[in-house]
Image 1: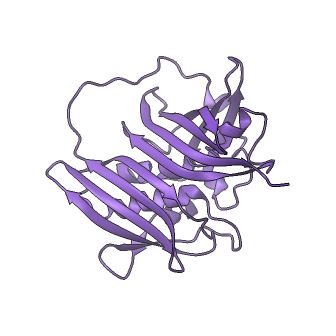
Image 2 (image 1 turned 180 degrees about the horizontal axis):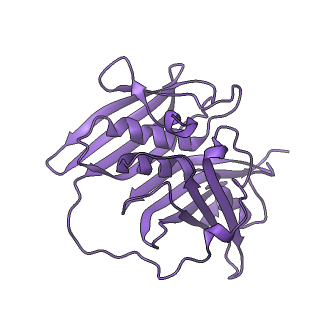
Length: 268
């Protein structure tokens, strides 16, 4: 199994509703937030009828995690109805709460549809392989192709992060959703600093995600090109908000994402 798929394949814990997420490594580094997004979604889904698909997830980052340690996920079965289910997921390391998430699932239903762009802004194949916008020691970057384009042509800062997984991915729709929730977290708060000419990589500010949400609209294919287009509509009181659309190769909006994060000036 690849490093990415092994990381996102949570194992059984001490009880029916307890799950263990593998450490991402390396020792002594802060864990990547996307790990908690992906593993929380995977743990919640283990307790839900597979016919019900993820609809949304809202996760709060309460403490920084350790990349070198396994993570325990406790799942609370909040609700199970005929068409929908709800779960609460709390992660812990060494007994300390790290994140708290709520996850909703639903059976697919027929209804009006919209959310499709006529043409994507560029051909990902023609772009240089940049990798993430900064260091990402916890991510298996040899298994994920990332190509970033930062655009200020309209006067607004827009980040277009193209990505696809390079290793074979089983044809399991849930796994593709889990991978998307993992990859899309990478430096997603950064546009709130880039608006002002700063960046997370420069470490000029205290920065990090405090709250992350994702709404799934259409199936995601992690092994094909996806475009995460993000911008920051507002920032104040040392915090910024980022909104994003995840588009598939066909131009359909597969998911909508919102993050809040810390972008506070460092004390001098």
